[in-house]
Length: 259
Ligand code: NAP
Image (cartoon, rainbow, N blue to C red; front, side, top):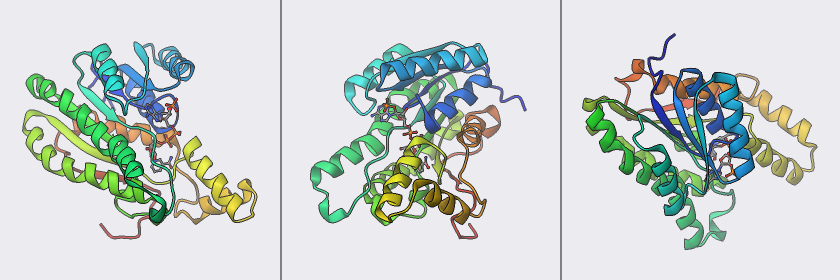
C-alpha cells in the first residue's frame, strides 16, 4: 500500500534503537525525510546512516536529551516545519510507590507527559496551517492495563492520554490527527533489561524466564519492533485521517477485554 506520505518531513524522538528506530525506519521506507534524536551521539548517527543506506531518504541525527527544553529547542530548530511527529522517550523506572518522592514523579511526568505536550504545542499549529499533520505518541499498554510496579509510567502516560483525548478532537478537522500507540511486550533492550532483573529476582536464568513470559502471551511470543513501526507508519499515512484520539494497543492479545 502506498502510504501517501513520500516527501513529508518527520521528527522521531528517542530513535537510536528499539521502537523509536522501528518507527523511523518504516516512515523512511514510505519516503519520509527524518530528524531523529537520542542522547548518545554515536548511536543516533549510526542509526541515521543505517536508515539512509536502507531507504535512500535524508535522515538528520540530533544527539540531545528530548526531556530538556534545550534538547527540544535543538530538535525543533534543525527540523523546521514538520508534517509528522512521533513522541517517544525512555520509560520511568519500575519500583514501589512508597519509595518514590516528588522528584521521581516530576521526572516521570516531565519525560512522559510534559515533553510530548511541549512538542505537540510547538508543531501542531503549523500542521493545522498546512492542512496535514500526524502525531503519534508512543505510550504503553500500561495506559489500558496498569502494571503496579510501573506506577510512574501508569500515572504520567495516563495524564498525556487524557490531554490528547481533548485536543485530538479539535485538530482533526484540519487533517491533523493525534493518537497513542501502546506497546505491550516488544523485543527491545528495554524489555530484555526488565526481564533480566525479574529473572534475577526469581533466581531463574534469563533465557528460561524470557521464554516463559513470551509463551504466556496469547501470540506465544513478544512483538517485533518492525510490527510496531509499520503500525506507526500507517497511523501517519494519508489513509488514517479519520482516526484521532485513539489508543491503539499492540500486545498480541494480552489485554483480556472485548473492547
Ligand atoms: P529502548 O530499546 O531502550 O530504546 C530507547 C531509546 O530511547 C533509545 O534510542 C534511547 O537512546 C532513547 N532515549 C531514552 N531516553 C531518551 C531521552 N531522554 N532523550 C532522547 N532519547 C532518549 O526502549 P523501547 O523498548 O524502544 O521503549 C520505547 C518506549 O516504549 C519507552 O518509553 C518504553 O517505556 C515504552 N514501552 C516499551 C515496551 C517494550 O516492550 N519494549 C513496552 C511498554 C512501553 P539513548 O539512551 O542514547 O538516549
